[in-house]
Structures are given as C-alpha cells and as structure tokens.
Image (cartoon, rainbow, N blue to C red):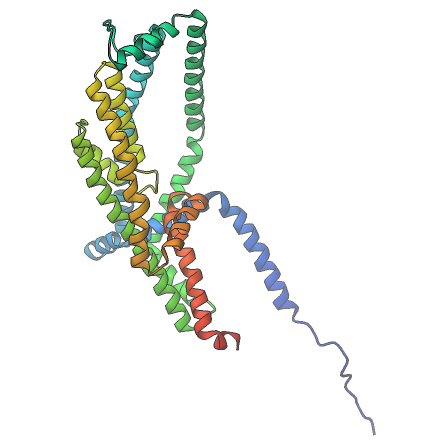
Length: 367
C-alpha cells in the first residue's frame, strides 16, 4: 500500500501573470505621465472648456444631427469668442505704448515734463522746475538716457523671447483645439467608460459624479456671473472717468474677467495709465486726476468684486467652505494656470466627498 502525503509546507505557485500585469501597467503609467506632462495643461483646459460649453454643442448636434460638424462649429465659435477680443485689445494699446515711450523719453530728457510753457506757482510747476533743474546735469542726463535704453532693450529682448516661444504655444494651442473637438464629440462615451471602470460601488460613483457636477457648475456659474458684474462695474467706471470707448472696454473687461484674479487688470490698468500719461504729456491736470481716479477705482472696486464676492458665490452654490474655495482657487491657479480656478476647488471638493463617504460607509468600505 502506497501512501502519498502532501507537503503542507511546499510553496504555493505564485500568480506570476497578475504580478507581471501590474508591473507593466505601472511602468506604462509612468511613461504616459512623462509623455503627457508637457501638454497636461492644454489637455485639461480642453476637457474643462468642452464641459463648460457642452450645451452649445448639444444644441448644434440636436439641430444638425452631425456630430463631427457640430463639434467643429462649437470649437470654431469658442476660438473666435476668445481670440478676437484679445487681439483687438492688444493691437489697440500697442500704438499707445510706443507713442508714450517716445514722448516720455523726449520730455524726460528735456526736463519739460508738464508742458513747455513757463510757470511759477502750483504743485506741478514746482515739480517740473525741480526735475528740470535736476536734469540740467549732463551726467544725470547720461544715466537717464542709459536707463531708458536698457529698459527698451529689455522690452525688445522679452518680446523676442515671446516670439521664439510661439511654435511651442502654437503646438499647445493645436492640442487644446484637438482635445476640445473630440471632447465635444466623444465626451459622453468617455464619461460612461470612466464611470464603468471606477472600482467603486454604484452609490459611491453616483455621489462622486454628482458632487463633481455641482462644484463645476458652481465654479463656472460664479466665474461667469462675476465676469458680467465686473464688466458692468468697469463700464460705469469708464463712463465716470470719461475714458474713450467705454462700452467696448467694458466688453473686453468682461472677457478678461474670465482670467482669474488679475484678469480685469489687463484692461483697466492700461486704460488708467493711458489716461494718466496723456494728461501728463498734455499738461492736463484734470485728465491726470481722472487717470488716478480710474486707477483707484479699478484697484478697490473692480478687483474687490473678483477677490471677495466670487469665493462667496462659489462657496454657496458648491456647498464648500469658503476657506477651501479660496485655497482651491489660488492653489489651482498656481499649479495649473487659469484652468486651475475650476480644477482646484473641484479637487478639494472631491477630497471632502471621499471623506464624507468614508465617514458614512466606513464599515462597508473596510469590510
């Protein structure tokens, strides 16, 4: 009689296939990260912008019944809405900047800062006479001229670096447009796929998806509403301080407000400086006062709307603590650029959602 005994201490065969799969999967994830990293912001921006403007694509799709053509029209519409106002604005101020540099250099070197007519009393006259006497020293004139030349050279070098970075910018813009187009066309299918592969129970998935939608909607809602409010407030300021084309500048300010925190300053700061400089070059104290007034108005009123009211609006709609909203806005902006004002609060909201889900269902999760 032969008795076969099993060796209980013999090692069990390992699941080499499973280990090999996870090693390969992790390695591919690392490689994919380095491939995507240079264009991560462009990709993320395309996805978020597509989500924001998806109702536009949806209406076009329902009306036309052609997914590719509808996605193309929606992409072109967004590109036009963003690029044309910015192009017009920067083109309109470029001439003023050049003229200011030439006139300021001429007046600074001549010492006639507030007009060529002699004057004997008043603050501007005293300031003008003191500066003129100071600049009568040829050594001072040499240093001032040298400083202006270096400043102009710095601006030219910086402009050249911008032009050299244009190919990289164009590539990122192409990736953004590419992602935007396919996010419109295939967005719903991708969301269903992501929902399907999430290793969570159905009610966990629903909670996270609903919280994400609430935060994104609240953030976009807050940004758009505040941008409209700032556009109206800015237009009123331009009218009060007699700035040319106040309606057009107000429209530009509305678009610029979509750029977080410092966005509106792109419009009201150059406008106030141009008024101030024109008053200075034409010896018009009234215009100088209007320039200073618009500068203060933009700093303490237009910017105040963005920095104080926006977090409150987003906090209320997203049901997220104002401290987390502010941290999310600034942290997202620092880490991801403009698109971070949406992604930052979203990440913190998802963190809070995970904590709430764990607190509510920790026994089920642990089990």
